[in-house]
Length: 120
Image (cartoon, rainbow, N blue to C red; front, side, top):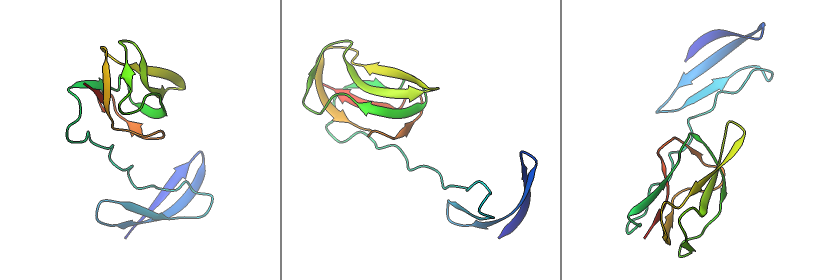
């Protein structure tokens, strides 16, 4: 365990951090901000997924899954809606096709370039 003194907005907190296998756990006064473990990795594309990828154009959070597996989509149809910097950004089908996989769920955090869905 390691002890730290942290100042946040002029408030001083004594924090004890226990080192573990890949995660951080903090023990601090109730008023101190909590230290959370890293988010779970984004789901990977399933085997047999389509060859056309719909990728995140920016880092953000999946706000809504607009399409479902097996649904036919046209070029420009919204497949996933991301929220980034308080903006809703539609991730659209790059071409006509059928949704082969949806690789994220509403609420998932994603990085730019993450495969959100695939099409056939």
